[in-house]
Amino acid sequence: MIWSGVVVQTFGSCDTKGKSSDLVLGFHSFGVDIIMAFCYAKNFDATKVPDFQSDIVLAAEVSMPIVTLRKYSGTLVKVMRYIPMWFGKKFGSPVTRAVFLLHAVSIRPKARVAIDTSPPKTLMDQIDEILRNPASLQNASHKIIYHSLLDPDANKGRPLPSRLSLWHEAQTLFGAGSDTTAIGATTISYHVLHNPEVQQRLVNELRTAWPVLEEVPRYEVLEKLPYLASPSNGGWFSSSPERPFADCGCQRGASHVSRRRSATACCPPGRSDDRWNFRSWRSKSLVMWPSRFR
Amino acid sequence: MLTGSQTVVSQWFLCVLRSPAVYPDPDAFIPDRWLGEDAKANEASLVTFSKGPRSCMGTNLAYCNLYLVIAGIFRRFDVTLDAKRFGLSLVLDTSSLKVLYVGREI
Image 1 (cartoon, each protein chain N blue to C red):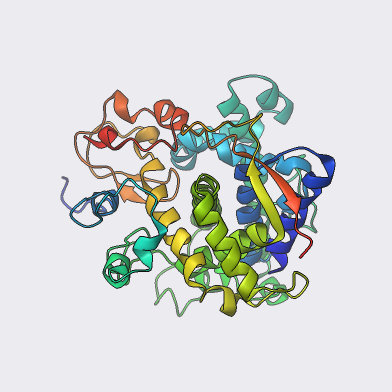
Image 2 (cartoon, each protein chain N blue to C red):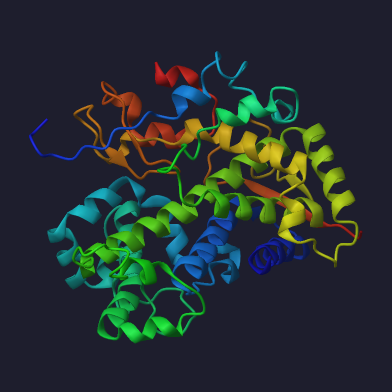
């Protein structure tokens, strides 16, 4: 409830400033902070950045088209490590600049990114520290992913994951745990805001279960609210077609695991033409457009 | 396919979620479809997180996030779309869903 309070307060501050809030960036910042606290016991404080314009969120928003290339191209990663940050941010396309930012957050030890937390500041820093000193895991406030990934019993006698493998796991969870819920919450809000009757029913239900604003109900209460769960299911349901798969180079029409948006799935055969171009998806990302699948 | 290669194959969940045979009028946002007599059957076909032992490990966390943030925002604020930034068009660019908030007194 703490995190939702932060993002709600941040949205609320926009009320007094008389300007609108970007729901997408707000939800994405919220997702980033949640997953960082939950899986890594770290805090990016993305929800506290004015207008949710944190580097990590902006980078994640636009860098997805080549995230797979970045993940599997060792050469690209090495090159990016030695190109100055100012060069990457100043030149190239918006996507290129974003990738440099995302790379900086995940691997560069001295990157100038909006992280207000104690060291280690990056995912790779944290991995290095744990590998150097496994006892440091005991300092985590709760069990995090590395407790399991580096558990010999859980690996059943197999070699423990390498440093690079751990980094890949970290990035995968980071993206899969933040972008997904952000898109789900955005889609739900979009539909609720366009359906006044739905919005009113939702608010009425919340008022009943949450009569005094200062007395926030526990999650166990909220999850049992039927109408709150209903648009949520509808949101997941409706958000499904907005997940493009083929933006990461699926040319063969074979099974290809994509991480764009909320799904990890196999691209169906024969879907490698322009209709699967990322930009065309993005420009109409929330349009009900079933024929795109035919 | 090469011998010994590992290939992940799964059904695209959209085939289920957008199937009129499974969900009548699948393109419409109808919250009541999750509340009526067919709710249980509808939920059984909700494969957004996949099903079974290989389903999404973050399902509960995702629902937790959604319930907290959606409940928090719509209970605490009177939320409207910012028509100046985003009109009533059905076309939405996810990079700019701008909304205005007015805090509720009670």
